[in-house]
Length: 300
Length: 298
Image 1: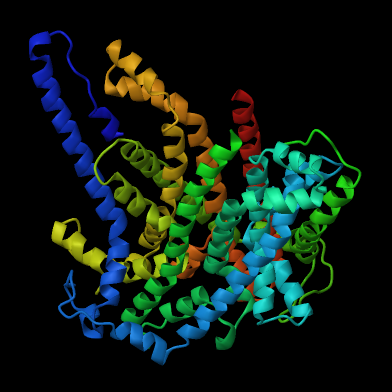
Image 2: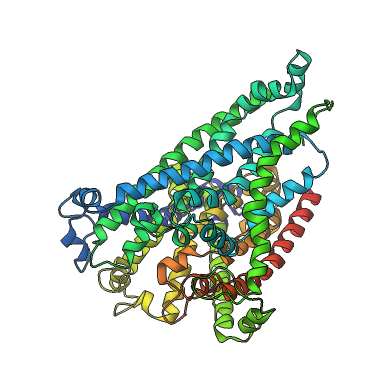
């Protein structure tokens, strides 16, 4: 709000001094914008900066009062400890399996279904797409109770399989909605042209529409992966053994025991959990741009 | 909708066959559970059991008569109201800032949006380290600046624990508001501002007469969406404070978790979950009605 206020109200009654005043005003408002941006970036970015910096401090320095803003001694010891002394690699692998599994399942099932949601309007399809949106809005705490009952009753407690399936309850509606709008943006005329040339509907879909939808598939894949990668409640309720813990759960159980696990190791773990998310985001960002560009030229 | 002009004979079959797996999964994972939870809420489920004898509405009666429930309801209100207000103000402010052109804007935008990408458990970890009474950098900085003269017990006092979880929640989720509002800000036709400037409108008048009306529908929708999501957020509070100290940050989702998986009273947990859900349904209906109106206006 302050940013908007500082912008360009130039007195118009004094034409001769106009430009000079405007210049001062302009410079002042530029400085203001930079100051505000700098403040915002430092405040918002500080926790992340602090996480990375502190993960590189040796154990003793993490408990120094007052804290050092930069480590006196840079070290990767915390990262080494994480791999040698803890089950971090197991958690990491489990998280990959769960997030990868849920994403794959939703992409295959949802990617297929979304095509029909976008292209057809037969009986029940409109209702179904609304129902899928409602599923996405259901609170996790409501679903977790009955799912826990099924998991126990079917003997799936403490398995990664249960986690994959449970995560799909949210990643599938996400995929359906996202892909539906993505397919909507691909002109149906392209498929019809292919069908005129002798393709079947299925052939046209597989050869024309799906390849065009790849950027969309990649980005929704990243979103569902991210969702499952971060998911905590299902993991907390469904899994218990060290062998089946995913990253969020594994790290969370360490937080309460800061005597055993030093903050250094926890922060190093935090950095490593964040890296895949950031990498994936960079991938989507590029794909999204490419997708938009392609959509633009092909749509004309 | 990109509706094809021609419907082929096999299309109906293709549609139903491709949708069947999605439908099956959603029915099994969302439809059936939602029904089940109503049945569970009417049972007296013992410890270690997954079902029990039917007791009618007794669990609901328990919830509506217990202080714990109302305490959690109040805490939920404080948590949602505090978080959403702060997120919207901060989100609007930073969206307006990022809408200006300046050097390194791309970098600034990436850093400001970053918390939204960070996994919740990571956010909690870092903030808990920063909130630490003794070694925490936050107390240190506030003391250096002179805001406080002795370390605050952030997570160990009722009021400050709530403030702490709200701070973390806002930090994590305000970028969503920035993203939503930035999108709409960038779509405002610049000619409107030029015309206003020629007519001698001050910057404040431009904001009040052009920006605000343009942004308002999206602003309200975003606020409502954030309300819905914040309302049933579980892990931030659970990981920051575990609902404590002394229930000071126990919101409704936390209460459901403790009833269901710590006290192992699934029936009562289900009743609280349904009451939570009913409040949510009201918010959801409001959201969809507003969205429909916004779409109709466009």
